[in-house]
Image 1: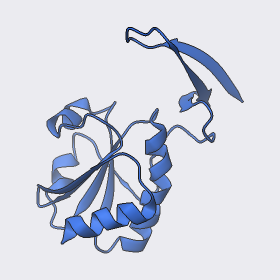
Image 2 (image 1 turned 180 degrees about the vertical axis):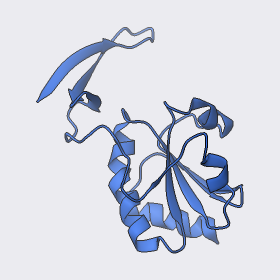
Image 3 (image 1 turned 90 degrees about the vertical axis):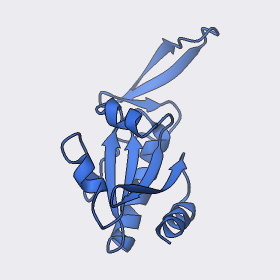
Amino acid sequence: MLDTYIFRDRGKSGRGVEVARWHGGPKVAGSNPVAPTTQTKMAIQLDDKNFDNEINSEKPILVDFWAAWCAPCRAIAPILEEIEKEDGEKIRIGKLNVDEYPDIASRFKIFSIPTLVIFKSGKELGRMVGAAPKSKLKQFIEESLK
């Protein structure tokens, strides 16, 4: 069951923003009801303990900077899972929740989510901001790994 709440933004407009709650987590009103997490079974859950080790690996990793309340983040989660199943031999997928680890997000100048960053040996190979269809995500990965 969905409950609807009206929140006031902090801007000058004072307009209300309608948000629905799904099983205790926020969800954008009007979108498909999904659990408020984008954690997948295969993706590496990144945190302050393993982040640097994972991005310094010789095998490239696509880091998805996300948050549970972000509808576009939830939209690309299953696409990233498919890409990892198809292309897992050449790239790994990692997920970092920016609400839980804001220092890491700030370190990499993550201002909007979702932001996808590809790292190899500690170096950033590519960056994409925003949700995109699978074909565009695969193209981004291919171009970054050249």
